[in-house]
Image (cartoon, rainbow, N blue to C red; front, side):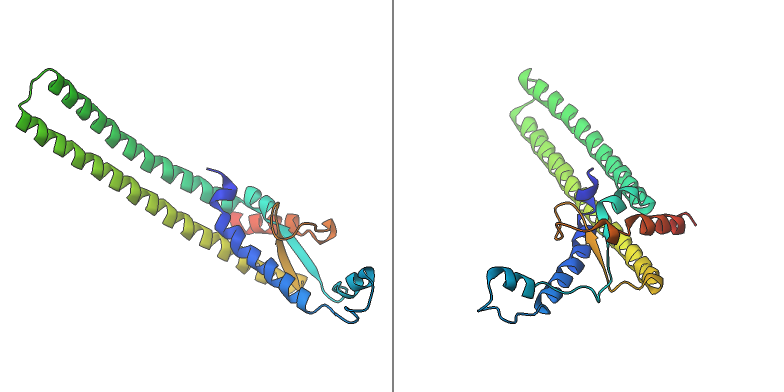
Length: 204
């Protein structure tokens, strides 16, 4: 399973922070002289002065690929998916064998019409059970994935709250390819430091 796909909720929830910050910064921008100044001057007037703000960001793509907790969670999901899939495949294999045997008996005229109808209906019920079980397993996996995403999000958020008591950033944003932030200076990137400390805590 693809990591970004499986941790999409985690990324989306953190992305809300970035969107909220952008909205706040936009509406605090000055709009003096907007109707009379040249286009270039209007752009300057609408540019937010961030000199008084301390902003950092975390590359969540890197975080998800190198944070051991996230890797362990993904491995747990992969194993769970494999186990459930194996159960379904075993049931489906047994059903396919029974269905093939039934078809062969019908072809050889070994069954009366009434017996054939009874067996056919039983096979339909068995296939319906397998399909239902497949749906149940799929829902179980989705729920387990959601719970793991929540656990991961809570772990990272709680860590950042403690981390920021020392670092004291005004904003810690998330940055990822295709996300809300298109360009971010490397000087604001705290991914490696956060990742190092997260893994150290997890190892303990």
